[in-house]
Length: 82
Image (cartoon, rainbow, N blue to C red; front, side, top):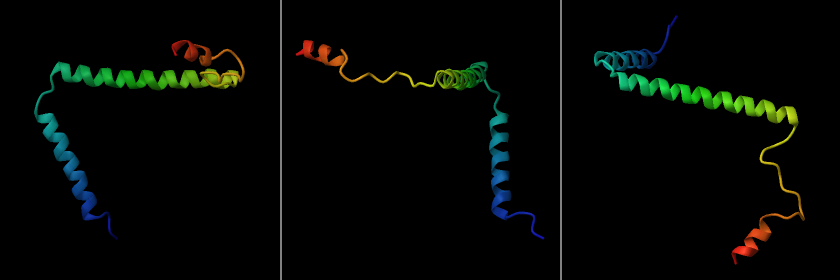
């Protein structure tokens, strides 16, 4: 029985080497801070997206709301610009 391909083993070995290389140099506090801040921003973005989607689903609409035909819209402001 074959437990895996040699290319798969090489890939894992290369990943380990890369990780070990990264770990040999101590990371600065700034690098760690930047990484954690980026993770926090991504988590916040995903959470905001989830909450906004829940709210939109609750109200059954889309945002921004579609403009109704025939109403006072950007046409009047476009005419003023000319």
